[in-house]
Length: 171
Image (tube, rainbow, N blue to C red; front, top):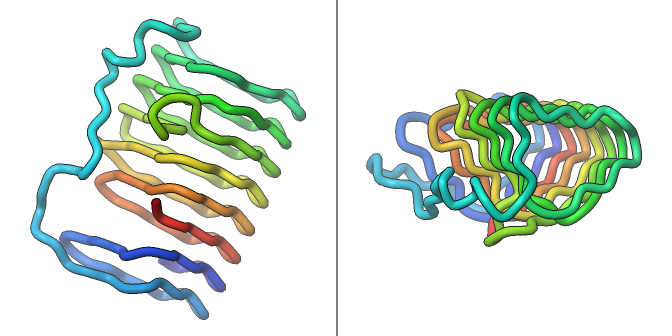
């Protein structure tokens, strides 16, 4: 964690190291744990039907877009428009990148907001409110925007926080 004025409301669990170089960052507690399976588990096959299937990449660049329902993406997902909102779940076989600001979204399916089966999930946009679980079982979650609020949990191999004025409330 290298940003400033960030707050994590909940316990931070880590396996190898916890490095904090930012200023005025706070969290309730930290606990070093042995490697173990993630406490939640999602399967791609669960989401391949019952929603909108996108063959290839899914790009949302129009500001003010409202997304609703389940989106299964056979490529990468890129949300770059500002003020994207709705109740949705995006499951991507590839990576997920969010660079738009002012998002306001909640999960559509089983508390899951984003599932990236690729090597990374990234947020570089600012002033967004995200509810639900962000699940990246094979890769890194990188959050670098400022003023983001995440009301949910982050599950990934590596977590890098470098934004500022961020609040994460683990559920």
